[in-house]
Amino acid sequence: MTENSRFKRLSSGRDYIADNYLESFSLTDAANNSFMSPFHFSRIFKENYGETPNEFLIRLRIEKAKQMLITENYSVSEICERVGYMSLGSFSSLFLKHVGMPPTSYRRTLWKLSSEPFRYPLQAIPACYAYHFLRKPVN
Amino acid sequence: MITSIAHATIYVLNQDEALDFYKNKLGFEVGDDMKMEGGFRWLTVYPKSKSQLQLVLAEPKEGPMFTKDSAEKIRSLIEEGAFGAGVFETENCQKTYEELVAKGVEFIQPPTEQLYGIEAMGIDNSGNWFSLVQR
Image 1 (cartoon, each protein chain N blue to C red):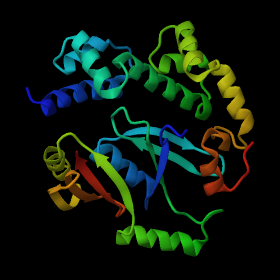
Image 2: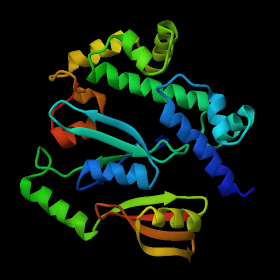
Image 3: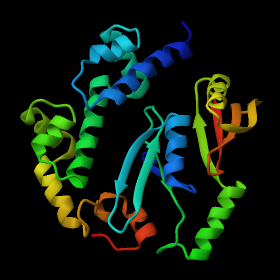
């Protein structure tokens, strides 16, 4: 099998995760989508993308949760379910590990900084860009 | 010591259309798509790879940085093809070129042997040039 063909299959499994990350699904399904065993899929995935399929899945879910916490009015429990987690405890632990603060603190902190409801504060993006596009000193 | 580059800016004519191009034609992923206070949209994309670099797709608009005249001049320069988006790497230039052509991506140079590898040159849907390089 050519390198390009293997990468295409791998990419197909990655796309499967990206397309279904909000649902409850097994990473075995993603591996099947690449016509690889879960072990092989995981190893090749890490080699090519620098993260395991599970780390990729968690990253997508946490990023989506961060967005929903700022731009939506759902409760943390609702967001937990909407990003594909069944257990609020697991979700909160993962969020804390990846973001550095619990979901409620993240929401409270960013909402407090923003001058408009459901919009990100300027402090959420690199200051050089905030200054460049909005010319507002950031603290 | 600076260890990597995190963000680089590409000025585009329309963020929605640029997002469609970079995501659905080039196959990039969306990093951030955030509505900021003040109405600014922070939109970043990145290739599916280990790369940490995110491309900020920004529209030149009248605002703190640009006067209306400056923004219009930049938009005009983008349309004229005066700006480059950068160099995108691939493991197989010919194959990727063919895939992108099939998706409707415009190229101004097919894969060609260069001193540094095989390179094709394309244009995004705003007018920014980019190189597609196999090293």
